[in-house]
Image 1 (cartoon, rainbow, N blue to C red):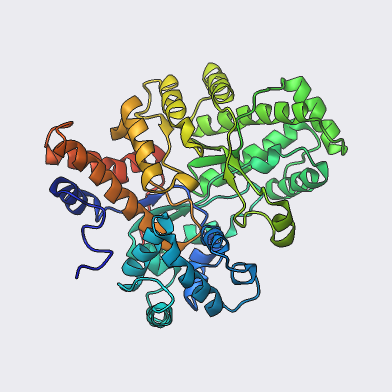
Image 2: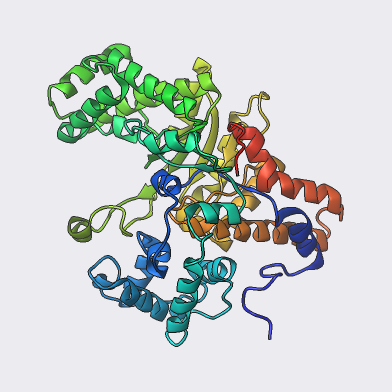
Length: 472
């Protein structure tokens, strides 16, 4: 009997199988946006058990466990690592048709060479098999990057981070380039000066530039942007509900900045106007260096106030937001373009209702300077699954150029999530294979193979322009 995860998993016709096995399967991975710890890569973290590598910090799994009636102590509480894994194993059979079912079995097969179906009866054996594999000398953070042929890792970093681990990695023999990504969201979170002002003080320390004025604040952020660039950064990132729809001028922003530094709480319009002013500055910084800007829009975060107070933010109580995105996104991109400050930009939507909006918005600001300069980004977070990724690729195909797409990313904290690149590649090949079988595109295997290679690796390599790296 064929195992669940087999060579042709998700590949239902000969064209799809040829495209995947002959063109996509063995390509290196450029994971241009993730949340891996550079410290764990630098120190080559080893994992003691399946909980540490599979469940630790994974709010995707916690959500399913809670939905299955598993008490919180087995998610984020004081249960032992093995007890937590056993509780998760009891949940997996109930997750049929959830993407987690595919991801977990794919990871179990690719990383641990285990074909067992995850359930309560197999849990003890899976715990033993994975423990034996993790004891091997090559099973570590760096070993997993080598196994998955990861060419680039783009971490996510605050401008005040000292980048000490990136500095050490820069001088290491690791063949994978591990580069920071500039995420300055806290610079715009002015609604609570009691939190914002200490962050500004940290920026002063990190940059060595005084921030007593708005000019100093921007110069400090620019200095950190310069340091990030020297560490190999080629992207910024912003996680916003929506783009700002108000923009202060220089004088308004300078006056509010002084009041914020004195502790005045701004009203909502002032906070948005200041954020708009800063988002233009960040666009300028990115454009001057040829970076790509990522806009992650539409997440409704930390909605369960009781649980957030109990166990903290970013623990699995987020959802898709339903804000109107179009006018504010167009306003932001238009202002950047008018000033000559529009960088390469990747747009990610979290609400699938916005697929066609984002795909057409990207087309409004292409300027002929870079192929696919404005990208409609891969299915993100709740859309990182068969239907979500397929809808994104269909919208991009119908309204733009799929052939210029920069492809998949993990957006993950787990070293096992590189299986998601395989998942994406299989879906892409099946999508194209279906079109060939339905007579919608020619049966030109070599041409389609080059398209697949571009989307899975070559487009990202050219678009982002990460530094070349040697090593082993």
